[in-house]
Amino acid sequence: MNVTGSMALRIAAQGIWNSVRRKALSVSFEVTHACTANCWHCNLGGPIKETRLGPEEYAAICRELDPVISHISGGEPLARGDVEEIIRAQANPGRLPFMVVVSNASLLTPERFLRLKSAGMHQLSLSIDFPDDRHDAFRRIPGLFDRLTRVVPECARIGDVGDVVLNCCLTSWNFRDAPEIVRLAERWGVSVNFSAYTPLRVDDDSGLVTDDLGKADLRRVLGDVIALQRAGKPVYTSERVLWRYHHFLTGGRIGGCQAGNRFVVINPDGRLTPCAMVMAYYYDQPTMRREFACRNTCTECYISTRAGTEKGVREFFADGFAHVGRLLGGDHRGVPEPATPELGAADRRTGVPGHRRTVTADGP
Image (cartoon, rainbow, N blue to C red; front, top):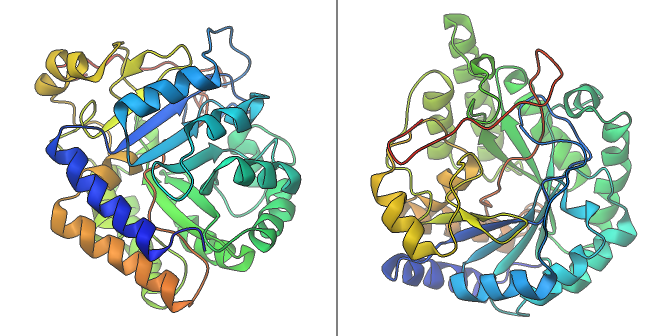
Protein backbone atom coordinates (compact mmCIF):
# COMPACT_ATOMS: atom_id res chain seq x y z
CA MET A 1 0.00 0.00 0.00
CA ASN A 2 1.55 3.32 -1.01
CA VAL A 3 -0.68 5.53 1.18
CA THR A 4 -0.16 4.53 4.80
CA GLY A 5 -2.05 6.02 7.72
CA SER A 6 1.01 8.08 8.64
CA MET A 7 1.28 9.42 5.07
CA ALA A 8 -2.41 10.39 5.16
CA LEU A 9 -1.82 12.28 8.40
CA ARG A 10 1.19 14.03 6.88
CA ILE A 11 -0.92 15.09 3.90
CA ALA A 12 -3.64 16.45 6.18
CA ALA A 13 -1.25 18.22 8.53
CA GLN A 14 0.83 19.86 5.80
CA GLY A 15 -2.32 20.80 3.91
CA ILE A 16 -3.48 22.82 6.90
CA TRP A 17 -0.01 24.26 7.50
CA ASN A 18 0.37 25.29 3.86
CA SER A 19 -3.02 26.98 3.97
CA VAL A 20 -1.97 28.94 7.06
CA ARG A 21 1.32 30.10 5.52
CA ARG A 22 -0.25 30.67 2.08
CA LYS A 23 1.72 27.96 0.33
CA ALA A 24 0.33 25.90 -2.54
CA LEU A 25 -1.21 22.52 -1.79
CA SER A 26 -0.70 21.23 -5.33
CA VAL A 27 2.03 22.12 -7.82
CA SER A 28 1.91 20.76 -11.37
CA PHE A 29 5.30 20.58 -13.05
CA GLU A 30 4.52 20.65 -16.77
CA VAL A 31 7.97 19.36 -17.67
CA THR A 32 7.14 19.50 -21.39
CA HIS A 33 4.30 20.94 -23.47
CA ALA A 34 5.02 18.45 -26.25
CA CYS A 35 2.52 15.63 -26.37
CA THR A 36 2.05 12.31 -28.16
CA ALA A 37 -1.71 12.95 -28.28
CA ASN A 38 -3.86 15.54 -30.03
CA CYS A 39 -7.03 15.44 -27.95
CA TRP A 40 -10.35 17.07 -28.70
CA HIS A 41 -10.51 18.95 -25.41
CA CYS A 42 -7.00 20.37 -25.04
CA ASN A 43 -4.79 23.04 -26.59
CA LEU A 44 -1.53 21.06 -26.58
CA GLY A 45 -0.34 18.35 -28.93
CA GLY A 46 2.55 17.26 -31.10
CA PRO A 47 6.21 18.28 -30.85
CA ILE A 48 7.03 21.72 -29.47
CA LYS A 49 10.27 23.67 -29.40
CA GLU A 50 10.71 24.82 -25.84
CA THR A 51 13.20 25.64 -23.12
CA ARG A 52 13.28 22.97 -20.41
CA LEU A 53 14.88 22.96 -16.99
CA GLY A 54 16.84 20.01 -15.66
CA PRO A 55 15.82 17.74 -12.76
CA GLU A 56 17.71 19.64 -10.05
CA GLU A 57 16.28 22.97 -11.19
CA TYR A 58 12.71 21.66 -10.90
CA ALA A 59 13.62 20.18 -7.51
CA ALA A 60 14.80 23.60 -6.27
CA ILE A 61 11.43 25.09 -7.24
CA CYS A 62 9.66 22.23 -5.47
CA ARG A 63 11.64 22.82 -2.28
CA GLU A 64 10.82 26.53 -2.41
CA LEU A 65 7.08 26.01 -2.92
CA ASP A 66 6.95 23.00 -0.54
CA PRO A 67 3.65 21.53 -1.86
CA VAL A 68 1.66 18.63 -0.43
CA ILE A 69 1.32 17.10 -3.90
CA SER A 70 3.75 17.39 -6.82
CA HIS A 71 2.39 16.43 -10.21
CA ILE A 72 4.84 15.58 -12.98
CA SER A 73 2.73 16.37 -16.04
CA GLY A 74 2.72 17.90 -19.49
CA GLY A 75 2.07 17.52 -22.41
CA GLU A 76 3.23 13.96 -22.05
CA PRO A 77 5.90 13.74 -19.34
CA LEU A 78 7.05 10.26 -20.39
CA ALA A 79 8.28 11.86 -23.63
CA ARG A 80 11.17 13.21 -21.56
CA GLY A 81 13.94 10.66 -21.26
CA ASP A 82 14.96 12.10 -17.89
CA VAL A 83 11.54 11.99 -16.23
CA GLU A 84 12.75 9.40 -13.70
CA GLU A 85 15.56 11.79 -12.71
CA ILE A 86 13.02 14.62 -12.35
CA ILE A 87 10.98 12.47 -9.96
CA ARG A 88 14.04 11.29 -8.03
CA ALA A 89 15.28 14.86 -7.55
CA GLN A 90 11.98 15.89 -5.93
CA ALA A 91 11.18 12.70 -4.03
CA ASN A 92 11.52 12.60 -0.24
CA PRO A 93 11.11 8.90 0.67
CA GLY A 94 8.53 8.35 3.39
CA ARG A 95 7.62 12.01 3.45
CA LEU A 96 6.03 14.67 1.24
CA PRO A 97 5.50 15.75 -1.46
CA PHE A 98 3.18 13.03 -2.65
CA MET A 99 4.52 12.40 -6.15
CA VAL A 100 2.00 11.90 -8.98
CA VAL A 101 2.88 11.30 -12.63
CA VAL A 102 0.10 12.23 -15.10
CA SER A 103 0.28 10.40 -18.45
CA ASN A 104 -1.78 9.30 -21.44
CA ALA A 105 0.03 5.89 -21.31
CA SER A 106 1.10 5.96 -24.97
CA LEU A 107 4.73 5.43 -23.89
CA LEU A 108 4.00 3.35 -20.80
CA THR A 109 5.29 -0.18 -20.28
CA PRO A 110 5.37 -2.27 -17.09
CA GLU A 111 9.14 -1.82 -17.04
CA ARG A 112 8.79 1.98 -17.28
CA PHE A 113 6.19 1.87 -14.51
CA LEU A 114 8.63 0.09 -12.19
CA ARG A 115 11.34 2.64 -12.99
CA LEU A 116 8.98 5.50 -12.17
CA LYS A 117 8.00 3.80 -8.92
CA SER A 118 11.63 3.15 -8.01
CA ALA A 119 12.44 6.82 -8.63
CA GLY A 120 9.89 7.87 -5.99
CA MET A 121 6.50 8.08 -7.74
CA HIS A 122 3.60 7.39 -5.39
CA GLN A 123 0.86 7.34 -8.00
CA LEU A 124 0.48 7.04 -11.77
CA SER A 125 -2.57 8.89 -13.09
CA LEU A 126 -3.67 7.70 -16.54
CA SER A 127 -6.15 9.62 -18.67
CA ILE A 128 -9.19 7.81 -20.07
CA ASP A 129 -12.16 9.23 -21.97
CA PHE A 130 -14.07 6.18 -23.23
CA PRO A 131 -14.21 2.52 -22.11
CA ASP A 132 -13.44 1.23 -25.62
CA ASP A 133 -11.54 2.16 -28.77
CA ARG A 134 -13.43 5.47 -29.10
CA HIS A 135 -10.69 6.56 -26.72
CA ASP A 136 -8.20 6.18 -29.62
CA ALA A 137 -10.14 8.63 -31.79
CA PHE A 138 -10.55 11.12 -28.94
CA ARG A 139 -6.83 11.12 -28.18
CA ARG A 140 -5.88 10.60 -31.84
CA ILE A 141 -3.50 7.75 -30.94
CA PRO A 142 -4.36 4.53 -32.82
CA GLY A 143 -4.24 1.47 -30.56
CA LEU A 144 -4.10 3.46 -27.31
CA PHE A 145 -7.06 1.72 -25.67
CA ASP A 146 -5.59 -1.68 -26.50
CA ARG A 147 -2.34 -0.58 -24.84
CA LEU A 148 -4.26 0.51 -21.75
CA THR A 149 -6.08 -2.82 -21.68
CA ARG A 150 -2.76 -4.67 -21.62
CA VAL A 151 -0.57 -2.36 -19.54
CA VAL A 152 -2.88 -1.05 -16.78
CA PRO A 153 -3.82 -4.45 -15.27
CA GLU A 154 -0.17 -5.51 -15.42
CA CYS A 155 0.99 -2.36 -13.62
CA ALA A 156 -1.70 -2.88 -11.00
CA ARG A 157 -0.55 -6.49 -10.56
CA ILE A 158 3.16 -5.73 -10.12
CA GLY A 159 2.68 -2.53 -8.11
CA ASP A 160 1.27 -1.77 -4.70
CA VAL A 161 -2.35 -1.03 -3.88
CA GLY A 162 -3.16 2.46 -5.11
CA ASP A 163 -0.21 2.88 -7.46
CA VAL A 164 -2.43 3.46 -10.51
CA VAL A 165 -5.55 5.59 -10.90
CA LEU A 166 -7.56 6.43 -14.00
CA ASN A 167 -8.50 10.05 -14.58
CA CYS A 168 -11.63 10.80 -16.63
CA CYS A 169 -12.58 14.30 -17.71
CA LEU A 170 -16.38 14.45 -18.02
CA THR A 171 -17.64 16.14 -21.19
CA SER A 172 -20.88 16.24 -23.18
CA TRP A 173 -19.26 13.63 -25.44
CA ASN A 174 -18.48 10.97 -22.86
CA PHE A 175 -20.41 11.46 -19.61
CA ARG A 176 -22.90 8.68 -20.41
CA ASP A 177 -19.98 6.22 -20.37
CA ALA A 178 -18.91 7.14 -16.82
CA PRO A 179 -20.52 4.10 -15.10
CA GLU A 180 -18.85 1.72 -17.56
CA ILE A 181 -15.51 3.45 -16.95
CA VAL A 182 -15.98 2.73 -13.23
CA ARG A 183 -16.63 -0.94 -14.01
CA LEU A 184 -13.61 -1.00 -16.31
CA ALA A 185 -11.40 0.42 -13.55
CA GLU A 186 -12.60 -2.32 -11.22
CA ARG A 187 -11.82 -5.02 -13.80
CA TRP A 188 -8.35 -3.56 -14.27
CA GLY A 189 -7.74 -3.45 -10.50
CA VAL A 190 -7.45 0.34 -10.23
CA SER A 191 -9.57 3.30 -9.16
CA VAL A 192 -11.02 6.22 -11.11
CA ASN A 193 -11.09 9.93 -10.39
CA PHE A 194 -13.35 12.30 -12.33
CA SER A 195 -12.80 15.86 -13.48
CA ALA A 196 -14.89 18.32 -15.50
CA TYR A 197 -14.38 19.77 -18.97
CA THR A 198 -13.63 23.46 -19.35
CA PRO A 199 -13.93 25.43 -22.61
CA LEU A 200 -10.99 27.61 -21.57
CA ARG A 201 -8.43 25.47 -23.37
CA VAL A 202 -9.94 25.33 -26.85
CA ASP A 203 -12.70 27.97 -26.68
CA ASP A 204 -15.34 25.32 -27.46
CA ASP A 205 -18.55 25.33 -25.42
CA SER A 206 -19.88 22.17 -27.09
CA GLY A 207 -18.14 20.05 -24.46
CA LEU A 208 -20.57 21.44 -21.86
CA VAL A 209 -24.04 19.96 -21.31
CA THR A 210 -26.51 22.66 -22.31
CA ASP A 211 -29.72 20.98 -23.54
CA ASP A 212 -32.48 19.88 -21.16
CA LEU A 213 -32.27 16.21 -22.14
CA GLY A 214 -28.50 16.20 -21.62
CA LYS A 215 -28.84 17.85 -18.22
CA ALA A 216 -31.33 15.21 -17.12
CA ASP A 217 -29.10 12.43 -18.45
CA LEU A 218 -26.08 13.85 -16.63
CA ARG A 219 -27.99 13.91 -13.35
CA ARG A 220 -29.06 10.30 -13.88
CA VAL A 221 -25.56 9.15 -14.83
CA LEU A 222 -23.92 10.83 -11.85
CA GLY A 223 -26.54 9.18 -9.66
CA ASP A 224 -25.50 5.83 -11.15
CA VAL A 225 -21.81 6.58 -10.46
CA ILE A 226 -22.63 7.49 -6.85
CA ALA A 227 -24.63 4.27 -6.48
CA LEU A 228 -21.62 2.31 -7.72
CA GLN A 229 -19.40 4.15 -5.24
CA ARG A 230 -21.76 3.35 -2.37
CA ALA A 231 -21.70 -0.27 -3.49
CA GLY A 232 -17.93 -0.32 -2.99
CA LYS A 233 -16.77 0.30 -6.54
CA PRO A 234 -13.47 2.22 -6.86
CA VAL A 235 -14.69 5.82 -7.33
CA TYR A 236 -12.68 8.39 -5.37
CA THR A 237 -14.41 11.59 -6.36
CA SER A 238 -16.73 12.57 -3.53
CA GLU A 239 -20.48 12.92 -4.03
CA ARG A 240 -20.25 16.63 -3.24
CA VAL A 241 -17.68 17.16 -5.98
CA LEU A 242 -19.62 15.09 -8.51
CA TRP A 243 -22.68 17.27 -7.99
CA ARG A 244 -20.52 20.38 -8.35
CA TYR A 245 -19.39 18.99 -11.69
CA HIS A 246 -23.07 18.70 -12.64
CA HIS A 247 -23.62 22.33 -11.66
CA PHE A 248 -20.64 23.53 -13.70
CA LEU A 249 -21.14 21.38 -16.80
CA THR A 250 -24.80 22.39 -17.08
CA GLY A 251 -24.03 26.09 -17.22
CA GLY A 252 -23.30 27.01 -13.64
CA ARG A 253 -20.26 28.97 -12.63
CA ILE A 254 -18.19 28.40 -9.51
CA GLY A 255 -16.41 31.39 -8.00
CA GLY A 256 -13.68 31.61 -5.44
CA CYS A 257 -10.96 30.23 -7.71
CA GLN A 258 -7.72 29.76 -5.76
CA ALA A 259 -5.37 29.57 -8.76
CA GLY A 260 -2.03 30.99 -7.69
CA ASN A 261 -2.79 30.35 -4.05
CA ARG A 262 -3.69 26.72 -3.45
CA PHE A 263 -2.50 25.40 -6.81
CA VAL A 264 0.27 26.52 -9.15
CA VAL A 265 1.62 25.37 -12.52
CA ILE A 266 5.33 25.31 -13.38
CA ASN A 267 6.12 25.67 -17.09
CA PRO A 268 8.92 23.67 -18.75
CA ASP A 269 11.20 26.72 -18.50
CA GLY A 270 10.51 27.14 -14.78
CA ARG A 271 8.15 30.11 -14.93
CA LEU A 272 5.06 29.96 -12.72
CA THR A 273 1.49 30.39 -13.91
CA PRO A 274 -1.62 30.32 -11.72
CA CYS A 275 -3.21 27.54 -13.77
CA ALA A 276 -2.75 25.81 -17.11
CA MET A 277 -5.35 28.06 -18.77
CA VAL A 278 -3.71 31.33 -17.79
CA MET A 279 -1.27 33.15 -20.06
CA ALA A 280 0.44 35.00 -17.22
CA TYR A 281 3.97 34.22 -16.08
CA TYR A 282 5.78 34.87 -12.81
CA TYR A 283 9.05 33.94 -11.15
CA ASP A 284 7.75 33.58 -7.59
CA GLN A 285 4.47 32.84 -5.85
CA PRO A 286 4.24 36.04 -3.74
CA THR A 287 4.31 38.18 -6.89
CA MET A 288 1.71 35.94 -8.53
CA ARG A 289 -0.56 36.22 -5.49
CA ARG A 290 -0.18 39.99 -5.42
CA GLU A 291 -0.62 40.63 -9.15
CA PHE A 292 -3.09 37.88 -10.09
CA ALA A 293 -4.61 35.77 -7.35
CA CYS A 294 -6.00 38.58 -5.21
CA ARG A 295 -7.88 39.99 -8.23
CA ASN A 296 -8.89 36.72 -9.90
CA THR A 297 -12.62 36.52 -10.66
CA CYS A 298 -12.55 33.66 -13.18
CA THR A 299 -15.42 31.16 -12.84
CA GLU A 300 -14.98 29.21 -16.11
CA CYS A 301 -13.48 25.93 -14.90
CA TYR A 302 -14.00 23.41 -12.15
CA ILE A 303 -11.33 20.84 -12.91
CA SER A 304 -10.23 18.23 -10.40
CA THR A 305 -7.34 20.42 -9.27
CA ARG A 306 -9.77 23.06 -8.04
CA ALA A 307 -12.13 20.49 -6.59
CA GLY A 308 -9.35 18.82 -4.63
CA THR A 309 -7.56 21.89 -3.30
CA GLU A 310 -10.45 24.25 -2.55
CA LYS A 311 -12.27 22.05 -0.06
CA GLY A 312 -12.94 23.43 3.38
CA VAL A 313 -11.26 21.80 6.38
CA ARG A 314 -14.28 19.69 7.34
CA GLU A 315 -14.82 18.43 3.80
CA PHE A 316 -11.11 17.80 3.32
CA PHE A 317 -10.93 15.59 6.42
CA ALA A 318 -14.25 13.85 5.74
CA ASP A 319 -13.25 12.86 2.21
CA GLY A 320 -9.67 12.03 3.18
CA PHE A 321 -10.57 9.71 6.03
CA ALA A 322 -13.26 8.04 3.93
CA HIS A 323 -10.66 7.23 1.27
CA VAL A 324 -8.12 5.97 3.81
CA GLY A 325 -10.83 3.88 5.46
CA ARG A 326 -11.56 2.15 2.17
CA LEU A 327 -7.86 1.45 1.72
CA LEU A 328 -7.33 0.06 5.19
CA GLY A 329 -10.53 -1.96 4.92
CA GLY A 330 -9.10 -3.76 1.90
CA ASP A 331 -12.39 -3.73 -0.01
CA HIS A 332 -10.70 -2.83 -3.30
CA ARG A 333 -7.60 -1.27 -4.74
CA GLY A 334 -7.60 2.51 -4.65
CA VAL A 335 -6.02 5.79 -3.60
CA PRO A 336 -7.11 9.11 -2.12
CA GLU A 337 -8.74 11.44 -4.61
CA PRO A 338 -5.89 13.20 -6.43
CA ALA A 339 -5.77 16.75 -7.69
CA THR A 340 -4.88 15.94 -11.28
CA PRO A 341 -4.38 18.40 -14.00
CA GLU A 342 -6.05 17.81 -17.49
CA LEU A 343 -4.06 16.64 -20.49
CA GLY A 344 -4.78 16.71 -24.18
CA ALA A 345 -4.50 18.70 -27.33
CA ALA A 346 -6.98 20.00 -29.88
CA ASP A 347 -10.30 21.36 -31.07
CA ARG A 348 -12.77 18.59 -31.93
CA ARG A 349 -14.51 20.31 -34.80
CA THR A 350 -11.55 21.31 -36.92
CA GLY A 351 -8.84 18.85 -35.98
CA VAL A 352 -6.49 21.83 -35.74
CA PRO A 353 -4.75 22.41 -32.38
CA GLY A 354 -6.73 24.92 -30.38
CA HIS A 355 -5.51 27.75 -28.18
CA ARG A 356 -5.60 28.82 -24.61
CA ARG A 357 -8.11 31.56 -23.95
CA THR A 358 -6.34 34.37 -22.12
CA VAL A 359 -7.48 34.79 -18.52
CA THR A 360 -6.68 38.00 -16.73
CA ALA A 361 -6.96 38.85 -13.06
CA ASP A 362 -10.43 40.19 -13.80
CA GLY A 363 -11.57 36.99 -15.52
CA PRO A 364 -11.66 35.76 -19.12
